[in-house]
Length: 440
Image (cartoon, rainbow, N blue to C red; front, side, top):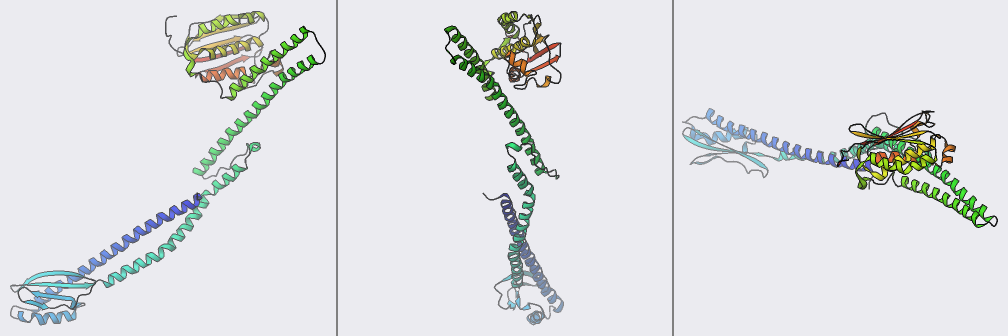
């Protein structure tokens, strides 16, 4: 494939050639027509002159001398030898010399002294042909020169116009994974090239953000996996250092199983995120009574609430939404698990549903430690934890809230949080309301 500047030059040259050919053909054709028209006008004037001469120089009495008068007149006129006069019934009065091969003919008939005369005049077109040929010669020889000049000018203009694109290409090739913060220079021309540079810079910004997130994701994932792997290895090594009884081996194996479950949960969570946020929930979406779904979940987690010495208050109204029930149940479980982790003993967790007309809200509120205001915008980031040491003690990975928001987004809803240090936190899942499909 030829470079763009060469293709543009060839296109310019081809269009110019067609324009020159069309204009040259039009000029030659029009010139020939105009010259022929002027020759015809001259011949018509010549024939009119013959008629005027005979009327002026002859009378009815001297009509017999018309041939002599015509011969004298023809000798005084340019190309008079190419005039022919005939008298109807009496033959030729003035005979023309042999007519040139390239000529034009004009005729005229007039009456005088009761007789009719037919006149003819020929004019040579050799001069016209020579003029047209000179113009054609000028076009044929000037066109290549003009095409060459225009082609060179077009190539220079194309190169100059595309130079910023070349500079952007070279700059883009120099940008590597270690230098994604670099940006292309935006020309001040405010044209297509500058908009292209701005689009490239916007894309580089997105790539930089994605690459940064990927690096942080990889580093955090490796960090999270390192701890259970080290614990697994330590447990196995301690078990192999000396002989132990069956109860000790069973205890060690239970620790290995527990750590394995923890690693499996983390791996599955990471895999779900890496495969594109959350699974496709559309096939599983049905009209669901969210209040009833939450009541079932509350019953299921009540033993955990009691074991931690907490109080669960439910205010569940029958509100309906078209959702994947398992996914919404998972969101609520994540929020409740979070509340249980950070609410002190004898604390209260509230689970409630609200009908806001066009939307419904599932809200989980606690009176735990709360979240600092400057940390609140980041709690939905993957692996982000307000207190990393405390989260590791409670078994957290910093992924639950990120997954919960992804599920909310996949349902076309939202998940927001409000909190104050020392006064607890409140998480609200907002979904579009669906009318109940039956009596409840």
